[in-house]
Image (cartoon, rainbow, N blue to C red; front, side, top):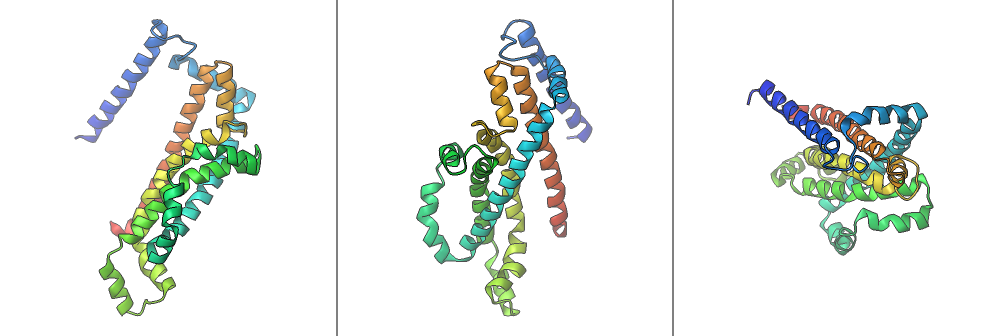
Length: 250
């Protein structure tokens, strides 16, 4: 399809969605207190900016997001590499993985409060848990998917030690798969931010809970769109980084 036509259709679809959204509360199909029209959002956003609440919430959530993403992704890559490289390590941790993997991030919230208190470190812990499994399985699968012939050829050229095999063969070959997992983790981490902050840790989640208790749904939507916008920025930047790292495949 022509790219201009595709962009025009996307813009038309968005315009139709916003028009329906605007019409629903104005025609009393939905109570405006429950779903505010989009035309009311700029004023709500301006109030949040003027009060300084928006900047504080975004700065606090970004700090939790970046640290939690870094901790979870770092641990996921490290353990995923070990599990992918060494069968004995995978066997050693197989039942631990099966036991812990199905537990959702929200289930760890009580322990986060007990262990860390209502502190930023508790939010970081919840976000890291949400990110870890995605990156772990992506890394493990990427390493396992490396062509065995490639490894045998590299060994024939003298790359026999575990470190040489990791840095000269496995890691470069597995990088595309690892990056796919990291890109998925970018979105999962934002989903975890709200869950990590709803119990009182300052940030977007806490601000949304305050707005919810006051039925300030326009403020709620402002922060929902804020998270969507921030995710879009991070994802765009990551795609650019991904393209640069994988430029050798072009």
